[in-house]
Length: 230
Image 1 (spheres, helix red, strand yellow):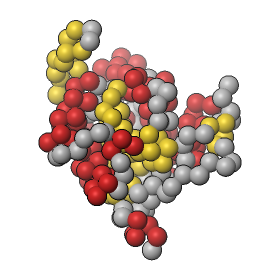
Image 2 (cartoon, one colour; image 1 turned 90 degrees about the vertical axis):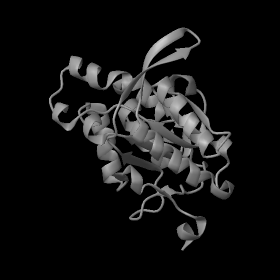
Image 3 (cartoon, helix red, strand yellow; image 1 turned 90 degrees about the horizontal axis):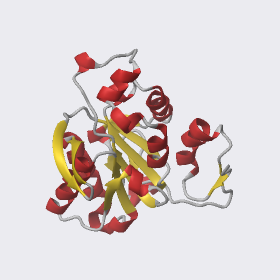
Image 4 (cartoon, helix red, strand yellow; image 1 turned 120 degrees about the vertical axis):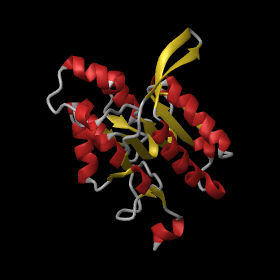
């Protein structure tokens, strides 16, 4: 089993090490990563940050290499993801090629790609979580997409409920891949109240909360270097 990793900032490695590797995944002692420029007013630099947004789901039919498939998108998450990336790439603070957006749904990937194009941002990788396996980027933003009315949230969900409302967003392998692609900073955008219904996501959200990095998505900010060094 892999016991030393050479990719992630040690703070990004902390949760997956405990959750997926029994606490045995260590960060190479000589690994040096720049401080994250993603954060919020209360904590300007967060290696891992969760931005919560409810939004609403759209069920869409999209064309893929294998034909048409039913997919989902969340316009409010698209807005937040595009906003954050626009801030990251402003004045080429971060090179677009060093940023990736990962999402479980092709419709969301297509919507984010369109949003970036409309804002004049090119060069960012926007892809599915599955296709990202084996790759790495300085900054990774994960868009989880799924949401539902608060009246539908079940604090004691059955497997069938989780499948209906969260689908493969709760798949441990997908989560592991998604949160271990980033070198310097990982930003997750999603509906934290819905995701908490899944035990795995509940633990990840508790981790973010303990790190003071669980905020409303609109509060996620890119800090200029001068702010970080002051």
